[in-house]
Image (cartoon, rainbow, N blue to C red; front, side):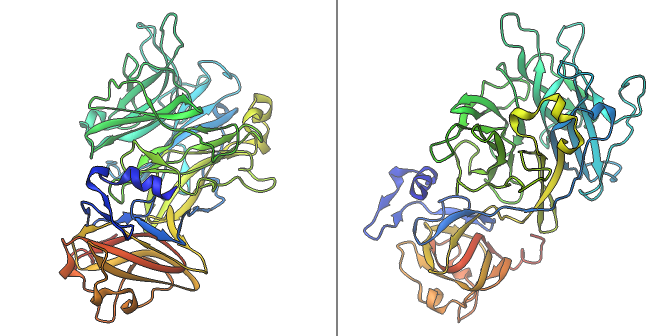
Length: 501
């Protein structure tokens, strides 16, 4: 599996010639001084005794948001969290948009309230009285709208499965964007199309009068401006091997082509499984990293847990350590024992990454109104915590392992590792030239063994840790590890080392 992923990610087979030692003569990968994450086989050109393992985040058990108002009486559903540094008042550092269903409306085109919450710390969330929408004669609520669009154009609808994002590319009047399901009048066709919205403040929204993607829509949609491609990108549900994930891109947010299949269940998944929901984001803290958090819906037990897929370009996806859940179902009679969906978005607090998910003890087919309204079955939002850049690790057990990278071209003078070494284990690293020959000054044998748990541990050899003489020269890493996990690496310079990670 590792070799297959690597072949997809190498620059070109035409530029890559295999030598007798199993290494490749290829154009070096330019890593500069950026953080590089171990996500797939890209940096494992040759390996033995090393496997890619998912590193699940820590569940906090927090219930950060639950139903409490009449307009939330049936259930909470899809939601989004953003870290918004552009807020004028600076009070609400974190913002949330979520959907709530009420008993009276269930299940109609008028059953969904699009709601808003905010937080100063990402843990305690408030539902402000926005006075923007009258619900049963009162505007003291946090509802933004229940239906949106023009009555005169006969396209007024709810918006369901909405993904919200901040668009750094747009003008101030359209700084916030959203993509989701709208109900458009299309005679002779299925009515649920992919709708687009925009807003200056994230509260007052305008929907485009026509679908932005003219295909059937369900589940939650993900969208963002991808600066590296200079395109808007949208992910959502398509047909494939059961429920699957598709992708489209365009220079204009108002119109995109139909989604094309990019991820689906495989033979390595349990029989009769779907990828339900996408929750795709472009990772903000390292270049060219895209993460997808689909729920794996297993039809047999009727459960959904959260998995991880990774990509370097947002188009070609792989699922390392495919049998391991990123967020597993809770054990026993707990709030997240039946079905889990990842909320969209990720916030950074120091060297931690906070992600949010919804959990319910109800299984997929049990989500009927009679069951939903029972207090013990309520769907709630909770939080998990990961350390910076720790999603997947090159992992070796007590018997040890080693891998060699393809040729890299870096800038800087110091090599740092994001690494976790268990008691009795160690990591040593050697530097090789482009041909794979050891560089005596930086050999594995001269490396000071690394132990402990570090987000950025400087590598040192007996002669010191300055690797500046190799900057811009094609260089390979050879890493030997025992009882250890390597999550990533970075070459840094003296000027950059005083700056926050």
